[in-house]
Length: 227
Image 1: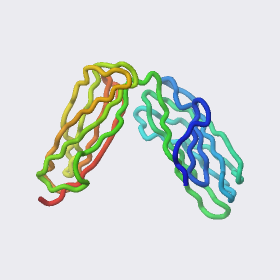
Image 2: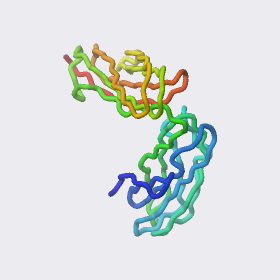
Image 3: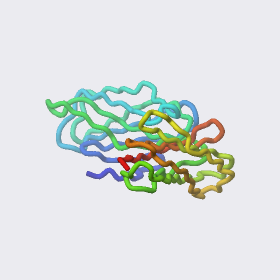
Image 4: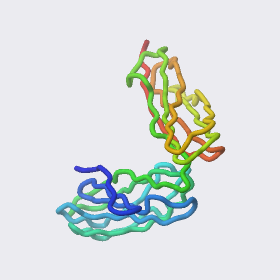
């Protein structure tokens, strides 16, 4: 099963998760309200019927899909449909599709790979967030978390925040870093530290801001065990 993305033309991205070939266009939109088109092609050998096809945003703060549900009565092998969805977008975000219906007479459910819709102009993005440790560590051992930020245009005065969601329920700020300047294409590495004081799951979330506008976010997690 191939899920590697590849371009099929300017502004279009195609991905395959058998038995559906997915296409989404355009890949970039302006801030505000826009239309995107989701293409579905049945590349399997069985017909799909009574399909409820929905497009979902993984970040409903920055991107909202309006009128998420579309109905497709029949998708024969080799047949393709194209469905339009309206999005209200303010920063680049990821979307994915869900399909519920029937494959022949059996219930059928599928979720597509994710697609990134870029909202122009782009300033910067989080490449990764990761804890420099094993997935499980003893409580009391210090953890360093690092985030990589890539500038998509010349930018300055960005803010990168690190927060820890602790097992007892506290959401603690670990660091707030001011990024004075990044040149287009430059990648900056930034870090924070935490020493878990008790057993349980620690979820680390980073937020990248341009003023009060959130550009991106990322997350990693570590399990603290008995010391």
